[in-house]
Image 1 (tube, rainbow, N blue to C red):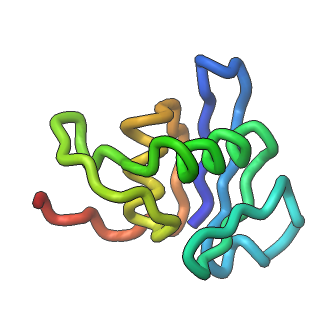
Image 2 (image 1 turned 45 degrees about the horizontal axis):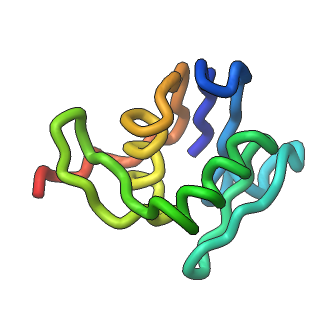
Length: 101
């Protein structure tokens, strides 16, 4: 999955690559690993993700919740970007939506 977006709070664009897309093409950004899964993200997003995994390890699955543990699985990570970080502009190779809890 490749996600591009713009974080208004940080004032910068971001790119996140997961799965096969993390190793495909240009080695952009920094690697973030958690529970045996690695993703690549632009430096600002990588720092935000590391901080979230360390101190606020939950993600909203929709605007109304529920909050679930933050993982680097594509569906959870995409939900975190959409509902906690915001600014998702495009997604290539998106996972199927997570069914409501």
